[in-house]
Image (cartoon, rainbow, N blue to C red):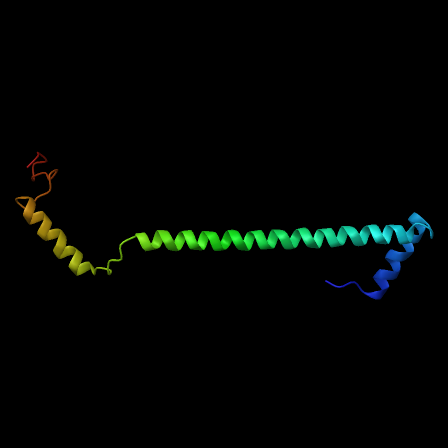
Length: 105
């Protein structure tokens, strides 16, 4: 995103026309101060965002550590577990099972 020498000359020419030869050093100093302040503020914003990111990562890790780690279960194991629970609850039919006629079982 650099500026070529031709572009600099065009900018200086228009600055000379707009402000006159006596005001150009003052305008250049003012623009330098503005650029320096802008750079400082952008650095502070980047630093603050990095700190927020670190805090979020820390909180996320703390929350993840609170969640119990359980190994993933396969579909076969899940099916067996559900069948066992269903058999433990009674006749193998759910509470809202209906018979062939549509009535409650």
